[in-house]
Image (tube, helix red, strand yellow):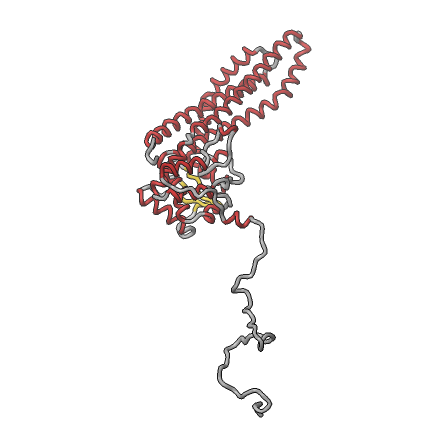
Length: 392
């Protein structure tokens, strides 16, 4: 399993990354054409559909170089500042060996053992149990873990998670995932812009149509209104199509990458049981509050699932554990509890331990009412107690 499809997976990631970048430009041109249709309806009311389509194509040709520059600029900004954007969303902060010696040493040992360049190490303050890798080149690669993960997992389990993220970097999964994040951001931005233009359209078109109706025949008005409505329907359909295509980008993130990353972790650590127990502890505890779906797709486990699991970017923990048991010889302990779960459990009244109980009182015919001596016992013989032996 550790080597199955590995090299074809890496080369496929590179090809898909380039195709996704090309698709980014196509989606932007589609959004610009939809915006041009809306703009033409706003500026020219009571025209035919052919008029709107012709003028929208002319507007697209005019805006083509500007849209291309905007797309390239977005890619450049994302290339250099995507990590800052992710850190702004997650709150991740870089740490040094002095700040996190345990975590830093585990990651450094894994990198040295395989000759992998040491990525940056970041920690985000969150009770969630998760981690993710990011970056587009060796100078940008970073591994981010949550404080909750550090508290809940032991050293072997943390080492397995770090090996999982290093495998994502080595296999080229990180570049593909970051490109998907960039595309989602661009489409989301332009989609919201076009939608705002669309929501403002009826008011303006209504005012223009009322002023022109006095000088036009009712038949011409109805034809023009029909053309405007059809143009708006086409624009909305294009915007929805662009959004759907941006969601289909998730399907390019093959879920097999997680199986390969799990196998790569076992190859690095030689400890399949550690990877299994780490997954069992992370299971259903990885939700990052405030994180977007694009960020969650970078994580070890993404508990968010799409409709009928169609758009889920991660296989279930159950399937990943079964694969590790079947192909790596690991042992599945089943669902595991973590310290945070024990802290959330209902409190029970503490019972006194044997060390906290007072010493038992000796019982006998002559000392039932006498407490035991707390100091050293004097065993020296003394004067007899009796009517003739009481000391004077």
